[in-house]
Image (tube, rainbow, N blue to C red; front, side, top):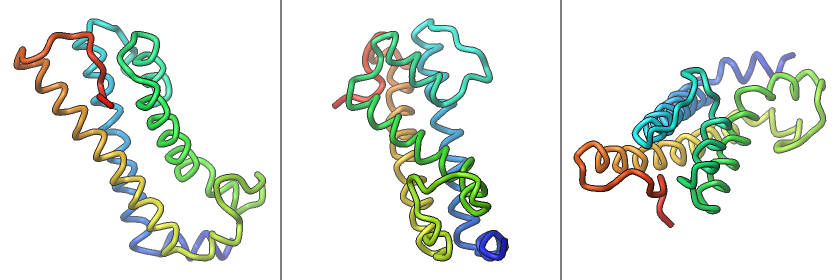
Length: 146
Protein backbone atom coordinates (compact mmCIF):
# COMPACT_ATOMS: atom_id res chain seq x y z
CA UNK A 1 0.00 0.00 0.00
CA UNK A 2 2.95 2.34 -0.46
CA UNK A 3 1.04 4.29 -3.08
CA UNK A 4 -1.81 4.96 -0.64
CA UNK A 5 0.57 6.33 1.99
CA UNK A 6 2.29 8.51 -0.63
CA UNK A 7 -0.99 9.90 -1.85
CA UNK A 8 -2.41 10.47 1.63
CA UNK A 9 0.76 12.42 2.50
CA UNK A 10 0.51 14.58 -0.64
CA UNK A 11 -0.73 17.94 0.63
CA UNK A 12 -2.01 19.31 -2.68
CA UNK A 13 -4.02 16.17 -3.41
CA UNK A 14 -5.57 16.07 0.04
CA UNK A 15 -6.46 19.77 -0.14
CA UNK A 16 -7.97 19.38 -3.61
CA UNK A 17 -9.94 16.31 -2.53
CA UNK A 18 -11.23 18.15 0.53
CA UNK A 19 -12.29 21.15 -1.53
CA UNK A 20 -13.94 18.89 -4.09
CA UNK A 21 -15.89 17.16 -1.32
CA UNK A 22 -17.03 20.50 0.10
CA UNK A 23 -18.08 21.71 -3.34
CA UNK A 24 -20.08 18.54 -3.96
CA UNK A 25 -21.86 19.02 -0.62
CA UNK A 26 -22.57 22.64 -1.55
CA UNK A 27 -24.13 21.62 -4.88
CA UNK A 28 -26.17 18.88 -3.16
CA UNK A 29 -27.52 21.48 -0.72
CA UNK A 30 -28.34 23.83 -3.60
CA UNK A 31 -30.20 21.08 -5.48
CA UNK A 32 -32.16 20.23 -2.31
CA UNK A 33 -33.03 23.92 -1.78
CA UNK A 34 -34.10 24.38 -5.41
CA UNK A 35 -36.36 21.35 -5.19
CA UNK A 36 -37.90 22.66 -1.95
CA UNK A 37 -38.54 26.06 -3.57
CA UNK A 38 -40.42 24.16 -6.26
CA UNK A 39 -42.52 22.36 -3.60
CA UNK A 40 -40.89 19.02 -4.31
CA UNK A 41 -40.17 17.11 -1.10
CA UNK A 42 -36.88 15.27 -0.78
CA UNK A 43 -35.45 13.40 2.18
CA UNK A 44 -32.71 15.32 4.01
CA UNK A 45 -30.27 12.49 3.31
CA UNK A 46 -30.98 12.26 -0.44
CA UNK A 47 -27.80 11.57 -2.40
CA UNK A 48 -26.37 13.61 -5.26
CA UNK A 49 -27.76 11.12 -7.78
CA UNK A 50 -31.20 11.01 -6.15
CA UNK A 51 -31.40 14.80 -6.17
CA UNK A 52 -30.41 14.96 -9.84
CA UNK A 53 -33.03 12.32 -10.65
CA UNK A 54 -35.72 14.32 -8.80
CA UNK A 55 -34.77 17.43 -10.77
CA UNK A 56 -35.06 15.49 -14.04
CA UNK A 57 -38.33 13.74 -13.06
CA UNK A 58 -39.92 17.10 -12.33
CA UNK A 59 -38.78 18.82 -15.52
CA UNK A 60 -36.28 21.07 -13.73
CA UNK A 61 -33.22 19.81 -15.58
CA UNK A 62 -32.42 19.88 -19.29
CA UNK A 63 -30.73 16.93 -21.00
CA UNK A 64 -27.47 18.90 -20.93
CA UNK A 65 -27.94 19.57 -17.21
CA UNK A 66 -28.63 15.90 -16.62
CA UNK A 67 -25.49 14.91 -18.54
CA UNK A 68 -23.36 17.42 -16.59
CA UNK A 69 -24.61 16.21 -13.22
CA UNK A 70 -24.23 12.54 -14.19
CA UNK A 71 -20.62 13.12 -15.28
CA UNK A 72 -19.76 15.08 -12.14
CA UNK A 73 -21.41 12.46 -9.94
CA UNK A 74 -19.44 9.66 -11.61
CA UNK A 75 -16.16 11.54 -11.23
CA UNK A 76 -16.89 12.53 -7.63
CA UNK A 77 -17.93 9.01 -6.67
CA UNK A 78 -14.81 7.55 -8.25
CA UNK A 79 -12.46 9.90 -6.40
CA UNK A 80 -14.22 9.51 -3.07
CA UNK A 81 -15.27 5.86 -3.15
CA UNK A 82 -13.05 3.91 -5.54
CA UNK A 83 -9.45 5.07 -5.14
CA UNK A 84 -8.62 2.75 -2.28
CA UNK A 85 -10.18 -0.22 -4.05
CA UNK A 86 -8.08 0.64 -7.10
CA UNK A 87 -4.95 0.81 -4.89
CA UNK A 88 -5.76 -2.56 -3.39
CA UNK A 89 -6.59 -4.09 -6.80
CA UNK A 90 -10.10 -4.91 -5.57
CA UNK A 91 -11.60 -3.34 -8.69
CA UNK A 92 -10.49 -3.16 -12.28
CA UNK A 93 -9.27 -0.03 -13.92
CA UNK A 94 -12.10 2.26 -14.88
CA UNK A 95 -11.91 6.01 -14.99
CA UNK A 96 -8.25 5.74 -14.02
CA UNK A 97 -5.40 3.39 -14.64
CA UNK A 98 -3.70 1.87 -11.61
CA UNK A 99 -0.36 3.31 -12.74
CA UNK A 100 -1.86 6.83 -12.57
CA UNK A 101 -2.11 6.44 -8.81
CA UNK A 102 1.64 6.94 -8.65
CA UNK A 103 1.27 10.54 -9.86
CA UNK A 104 -0.20 12.48 -6.94
CA UNK A 105 0.06 15.75 -8.85
CA UNK A 106 -2.10 14.35 -11.66
CA UNK A 107 -4.72 13.23 -9.15
CA UNK A 108 -4.58 16.61 -7.42
CA UNK A 109 -5.19 18.30 -10.77
CA UNK A 110 -8.18 16.05 -11.46
CA UNK A 111 -9.67 16.78 -8.04
CA UNK A 112 -9.04 20.51 -8.55
CA UNK A 113 -10.79 20.57 -11.94
CA UNK A 114 -13.72 18.61 -10.53
CA UNK A 115 -13.95 21.05 -7.62
CA UNK A 116 -14.01 23.98 -10.04
CA UNK A 117 -16.79 22.36 -12.09
CA UNK A 118 -18.87 21.58 -9.00
CA UNK A 119 -18.35 25.10 -7.63
CA UNK A 120 -19.31 26.66 -10.95
CA UNK A 121 -22.60 24.77 -11.03
CA UNK A 122 -23.23 25.61 -7.37
CA UNK A 123 -22.77 29.31 -8.13
CA UNK A 124 -25.22 29.05 -11.02
CA UNK A 125 -27.72 27.22 -8.82
CA UNK A 126 -27.35 29.84 -6.08
CA UNK A 127 -28.14 32.63 -8.56
CA UNK A 128 -31.28 30.76 -9.61
CA UNK A 129 -32.25 30.19 -5.97
CA UNK A 130 -31.72 33.89 -5.24
CA UNK A 131 -34.00 34.83 -8.15
CA UNK A 132 -36.72 32.56 -6.80
CA UNK A 133 -36.38 33.89 -3.26
CA UNK A 134 -36.58 37.50 -4.47
CA UNK A 135 -39.60 36.71 -6.62
CA UNK A 136 -37.74 37.69 -9.80
CA UNK A 137 -38.70 34.34 -11.34
CA UNK A 138 -41.50 31.86 -10.82
CA UNK A 139 -40.87 28.28 -9.72
CA UNK A 140 -40.87 25.62 -12.41
CA UNK A 141 -37.97 26.71 -14.62
CA UNK A 142 -34.77 24.84 -15.24
CA UNK A 143 -32.07 24.89 -12.59
CA UNK A 144 -29.38 25.34 -15.26
CA UNK A 145 -30.30 27.08 -18.49
CA UNK A 146 -28.53 25.96 -21.66
